[in-house]
Image 1: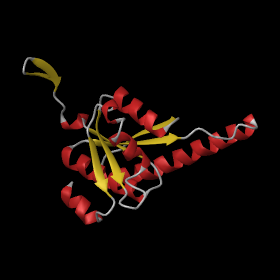
Image 2: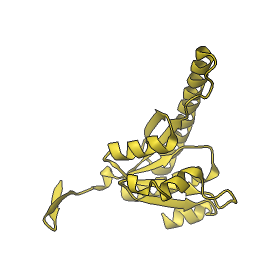
Image 3: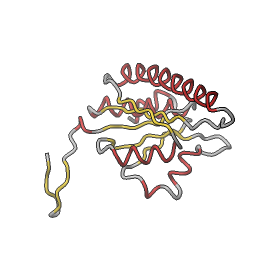
Amino acid sequence: MDQETDGKKCRNHGSTDRIFLVVVDDSDEMLQAMRFACRRALHTGGRVALLYVIEPAEFNHWAAVGDLMQEEAREEAEARLNKLGEEVLEYSGQIPVLYMREGDRRDELVKLVNEDDQVSILVLGASSGSGGPGPLLTALMGKHIGKLRVPITVVPDNLEPAEIDEIS
């Protein structure tokens, strides 16, 4: 449904249009971001999407070895997405949207957000450790912030599950 605001047409995003996108990695803060996204989706009738980006294999000496490494990475990505997808279903009550891409994580994230109009919020976890919030968040909050068409919700890693549930 479209509505007109200040002479401009804008899409009326019903709750089923709202997708909370989480970028999958192996960090604890990603799990907290996913929990937050699931709770927000549950309370707003939205859905969670998970993006797993397979980084290109750096092994170029033998093509067959590189291909095998990519195939193993793809299988690992599928297994991780399936496991996390089950958790999303449990937490949010909705089957998640799953994306798997190959390339640079930051570039693939920006492409996906700008290609899929239903992605409405990017949810990222932030590390409070000495290494900073994480390379993806650092890049996006820096010179790449203008490349995204959606807001970013940052979930700090020092929140307890009960605190995440309370604020979401």
